[in-house]
Length: 472
Image (cartoon, rainbow, N blue to C red; front, top):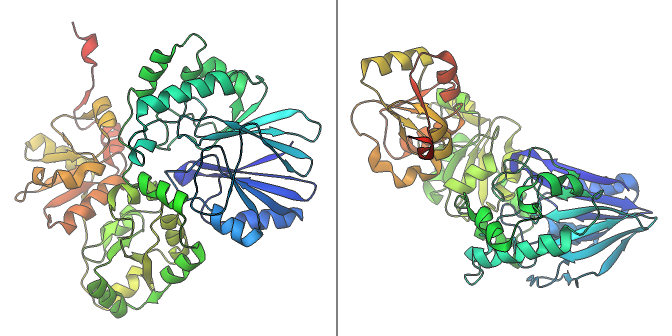
């Protein structure tokens, strides 16, 4: 049986495509659906079903557009209550895709409608399971997301459901089944996912902490809930979009792909109070940018940081991109529900600069200069990495202010005297620098290469974290 995994690394997402005898099905599609349509066309197949494992939180699924454009039927598992036409399947119900079969296995826990789809080939042999966020490679889905939409669904209740789903529905299945999860390492939908994106169920039974056969319910719940970090703020909003429906991506693209001259761009910014979002790489942004713009580069976890740092999912956005990256920027915003891009700067930042409009920049220093400032004792250093990264190793004397909390700690930054920012490599610290610049802090500098370069140079004293339980 051929199962095609279509993996999108920037949001650590896996969609799946199967085809047999002229019929095809897509599982958990992304917002932009044309690649799936093109794939089926290449096979000479008609997309018959769009299967959804659950109402996703970390991205807006493409189920509505895909169904509208192909005539496919949207299928959810038991208990789902979508706000649009869809088939809500029964547990153990089977669907045919050509000579293949797709069997519904209701596996509540991540969410109550979470469903695993068992794939059966043309000979009746069970091939694999598309598990959504129920089972990952090395991990299982976090049970604390649904309560942000339905208060009664506490994380303890969902974790208990997940325990039953894994023990009674997943673990009894054959060891040779291939596990096809919805996410890999880097997703916020789990806490310790493997970088591998498929495995056999038998190997997961041996290696996945949550599938230990001797694990009782209380131990499972305790281990599952330990170490969970708060989910990104946009997650509940994406869930509601996936439940209630959303605007077609075609309309979103039409609105966002409006080229604006520098003068028209400035006028739009003043009239609409739109956020100016610059998606160029950090090192390019630092050399020159439009004042009051925020830098979130496309070259890393763009969607996640947009969701973390732009609280209003309906915020109007004006884009500054590298030439040719306008469409990609709009699509990647729409993947996480930010549908209100209203135009982009035609000709990019060069056009703005050539028109003699005001520009700003971020001062950056080398590791060598940073080391000199540390030796003089005159530098106040802010490390914007996650707390876990900071705890692992950090510059002695640095203050940890994680990027996703920066707006809550503006009072921590000095208004007089230069202070220094760094992250691991420069991506997050440039986001922080742009936010602080917008807030009126012009007395900052950024370290080129971040902590990775600082640590490698050996020129600055760092401290390793020692777990208190190991102290004598």
